[in-house]
Length: 245
Image (cartoon, rainbow, N blue to C red; front, side):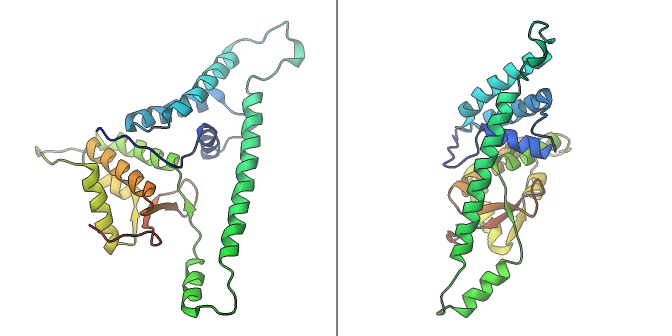
């Protein structure tokens, strides 16, 4: 597509591993390395297809996973005795440490947001009511990996659709960006899954996906979930919204 995606903020290799561990409901201390490695490689292939500029950061971890996987497949060394080290242990320690740092960062961010919601006595009552109304619903920000999961599922099904008419319709990322912004003017929320399901070809699916990434990068939209790993919703970022084209 000649459209290189550069993300200013993205999740790294350890984030992907934690995502897969939570998605599969796995004990972090007992990672089925073969399963996780296979799934990790699937996500890398998707990133390569999308030409994401972060792929290189994930390849180093892929090599580490492959090395650990090969060690776990080897029979135990009889000379090592009972004190032999689990080849997964170093990775587990890194994941635990990283998870702790992420949790602390999230707690600090939550405190910052709570502080921003405090007002002095001279407060705009209408603004305060809007904030209280918005606070009734808690939404989770969808990650890059949530989006790739949805894309992967859509690509599996798009080939199943029977198209009996020859279509010369062309799709472009710019066109999908304009289309999304126009639709969001009338509809406050869009189901990402439904949008992908309406796409008739793999080209249209990928163009739509990249358009969403670009709008997220430009802070024009937010991608959220009511619960982790559930359907992704696209909403307009009202704090940064510009008029639709």
